[in-house]
Amino acid sequence: METYPDFFDTTLLSKREELMDLGIDPYPYDYDRSHTIATIAEKEEALTASKETCSIVGRVTAIRLMGKSLFFDLLDDTSHIQIYAGKNDFSETDWKLLAKLMDIGDYMNISGFVFHTKMGELSIHAQKAQIVCKSVVRIPFNKTTDEKTFNEVVDPEIKYRERYIYWQINQEQRKRIEMRFRIINLIRLWMEKEGFVEVTTPTIEMIYGGAEARPFKTNIWALQNQDAFLRISPELYLKRYIAAGFPKVFTICQNFRNEGIDKSHNPEFTMMEWYETGTDYVFQMERFERLTEHLARELYGAPIIEYQGKEINLAAPWKRISMVDAIKEYAGLDVLAMTEKEIEDYMTANGIEFIKGQPKGLLIAQLFEELCEDKLVQPTFIIDHPVEISPLTKMKRGMPGFVERFEPFINCMEIGNAYSELTDPVEQYQRLLQQKEIKRGDDFENHPLDLDFIKAVGVGLPPTGGVGFGVDRIIMLLTNAATIRDITPFPLMKPVK
Image 1 (cartoon, rainbow, N blue to C red):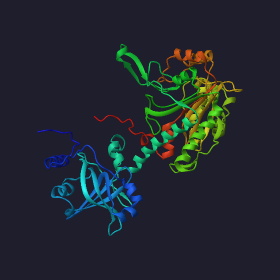
Image 2 (cartoon, helix red, strand yellow):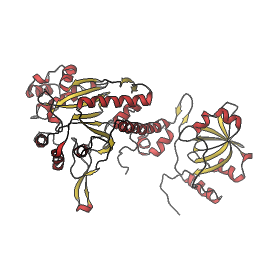
Image 3 (cartoon, one colour):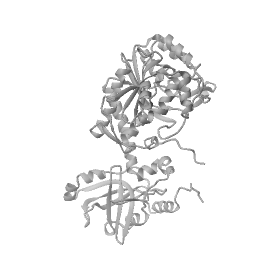
Image 4 (tube, rainbow, N blue to C red):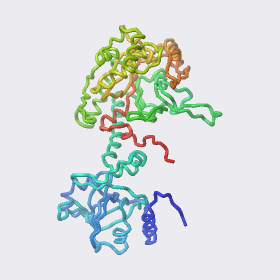
């Protein structure tokens, strides 16, 4: 006797066998579809009057058998509709298929004419039925009325691991994932219209860099198991394109960081980076806010969005404030006038953990994170960061110890990162060496020095503005998703034992 995985339903398996015994193939090669369900709803008046035969395909979500009459609901990728089938309209075999062997979750190809029931419900009077795919796994479809949804699935295992089930039973979430890819397409079209060339960078690198992050490590069998790493950032390779003479490039790619998982972090995430010669971070602030506003207008016709009960205005220009001025505005501290010891004493007195002996710039950055980020609800550019946390960035003109860098925040969440790129190869080499000497936490990994990157900068980088655009977090905001898992098609989940 054959054995099957325990998630195969024995009743559904037996019906599959019975269909085959009747000579019905429950897994045909193709089907005919003349209309989507949404199209039928749009043209219901003309279709009802003409009695034109319509052929639709969808998944069965509910079944109601009443003697010689059968009503069932069909769901396709656009909408749902009620189907009516009468016993007298079908052969004995086909009626058995509909009345006894069809189950919730099966895909059906139905042909018939459009009509309205006595209750006024738009329906299709079935004249022909073909099973397109027999499901052998139970799908827990909700029961929905105009007022309430019953038996709604809340199990995170189904919501985030078994997406193939959850997107069937939660159309709002499926549409959110569709919106994700529409947004990415809008980004790509906008960038190309602005004259950028889309490029790719290696996913597997021998030397990782471009961000402060712990990498995923692997090895390459064909190279005597040499160590290699999954990309944490495409930055250093995109700058190689600039060094090679490409003036405006961008990439939309997956990055991999072996770090924490929370509502805004997933170890694999989507990022866009672009680099544009002849520009600095001031120019790129304007480009960043224009792109974000453009997305909102394309999706909703206006720059105003609602996110988790808050109204957010994405219209340019956004607020711009330096990191030290933000600390002064939101925490009342003039960190420029404070010594390292005074900052450490303040952090100790206020229960802020820190590593003793760090440079003042790192302490300032940590103060900002602790005291200011949760105040930045409306779009805000935090500009002019300490040099110690920005080794790839030009120094701030007229402000020693700081660099020309910005991070945009919306709803207390960082959604990007950008620089006036450091183009002096000697200074770049020295800054990366200095980074290795800075005291960090025990879990911080000093990045290897990528000498080939230094060589590329030495070939010559023109003035360049570079931007990281947080695609996943932008999508969270534009789709009102509470967590990054809701907009990640297949988020990382702990393996099932």
